Amino acid sequence: MRKSRAKRALTMTQGSLIKNIFIFSLPLMVSNVLQVLFNMSDVAVVGRFGSDNALGSVGSTTTYVALFTGLLIGLGTGVNAVIAQRIGAGDDEGVARTSHTALIISLVFGLIVSALAMGLARPVLTLMGTKPQFMDGALLYIYIYFTGAAGTAVYNYGNGVFSADGDTRKPLIFLTIAGVTNILLNLFFVIVCNLSVAGVALASTISQWLSCALIIIALVKSKRAYCLRISCLKIDKKIAERVLVLGIPAGIQNAIFQVANLFIQAGINSFDGTVVEGNSAAVNADTLVFELMAAFYTACTSFIGQNYGAGRRERILKSYYVSLAYSFVFGLIFGLLLFACGDVFLSIFTGSADVIAAGKDRLSIMCFSYAISAFMDCTIAAARGLNKTIVPTIIVILGSCVFRVFWVFVIFPIQGTTTLLYLLYPVSWAITAVAEIIYFIFAYRNSLKLLAPAPKEEGAEKAV
Image (cartoon, rainbow, N blue to C red):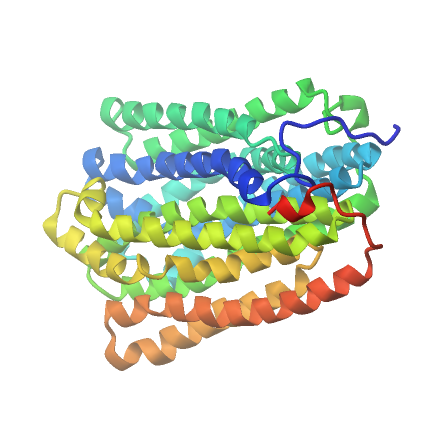
C-alpha cells in the first residue's frame, strides 16, 4: 500500500494549536462526560429504586471496577499513540497493519481482564474490608459487569484509532447511543423487573457490547487506511510489541492509581456505613472532572504523536503547554462548580441527609485539588506521545501507589479522620507531578536529537 495522506477535517500538524486542540477535545469531553453520567446512572438508579444496601453494594465495587477498566483504557491509548505517529509520518501501510493487529490484541486482552476481574473479586473485596451486608451484591455486580469487558476493550481500541486521526465525533455518537440504552435498561430492569444490583450490571454489559458493535461497523465502512478487512486480520509481531509496550504501561499507570485506591477504600470501610455510602456518592464527582480533563490528555498524546511522527519539532512542546493549560483550567472551574452545587449533586444518589453530609466531607477536599492532577496526568500523556512509558509508570508506582499506601498505614492513623485520608490525593499528585515533569524535560530533549530539522510551516509563528 503506497504512502499517502488524505485530507482530514482536523489537521494536527498545521494550524493553531489552541484552536485545534480545543476542537479535537470538545467531542471527547462530551463523550467522556456522557460515559460518566451513564455509569453514574447505575449508582443513582439503585440508590433511589433498588433494594436495601444496593447503593453500598455497587459503590463498594467502584474502585475495583476502575482498576480493571483502567487496563483496557490504557491499551486503547497505546493504540492511539502508535496510529497517530504512523498517520503523522504518512505511512498508510503501517496504519493498516497497526489497526488489524491492535483489534486482535484488544479482544484477547479484554477476555483476559474479564477472567482476572471475576476470579479475584472475592479475595480483593475481602481484603478491602467490604462490609458483609454489601458483599453478595458487590460480587454479583462484578460477575455480570465484566462479561462485557471484551466489548469495552474493542470500543477503546476503535476510539483510539479514530481519535488518532482527529475524528472524535464517531465515538461520541456511538457512546451516546449505548449510554442512552444503558439508562433505559437500568430503569427497566430495576423498576419494572425489580432486579436491583443485577439489573444495573446487566444494563451496563449490554451497552458495552452495543458500543463495541457500532464502532466495529464504522471501522469496516471507513475509507481511511485503518479500515477493517477480515482478510487482513493477522498479528504483525513488531507492531504488536509497540502497541503493548505503549499500552500495557499506560494501563498499569491507570491501574496503579486504583490499586492505591483499594487501600484508601479499605480506610473508608473502617468507618460506618453512612460514610461508605457518602464516599460512594462523592466519588462520582471525581470521575466526572477527571474524564473532562482526560480529553485534553488524549489530545496531548495525539498531537505530540502526530507532530513527532511528522518531524514538527516546533509543535511538540507547544502541544504539551496548550493541553496542560486547558486541563488545569477545566479542573479548577468544574471543581469549584461541583463544590458550590455539592448538595444538589449528592442528592442525585441519595435522599439521606447524613449520607449527603458524609459526601460533602470528601468534596470539600477534592474539589479544590483536581487542577493539581493536570500537571501529573498531562505530563504522562506527553511522554507517551514521545514513546516514553516505562519510566513514567515507575514514577506513578512510587508517587501514587507506594506513597499512598504509606499514607494510609502511617499518616492516616495519626488522627484517623476522613479529612486526613482524603488529603493524600492532592499531596501524592503534587509529588508525582514534580518527578514526571523532570523526566519529561529529559525525554523531550533526547527525542529532539532523533529528529532531523524540519522546515517551519507557513505562518508557524501564529500557529499557537
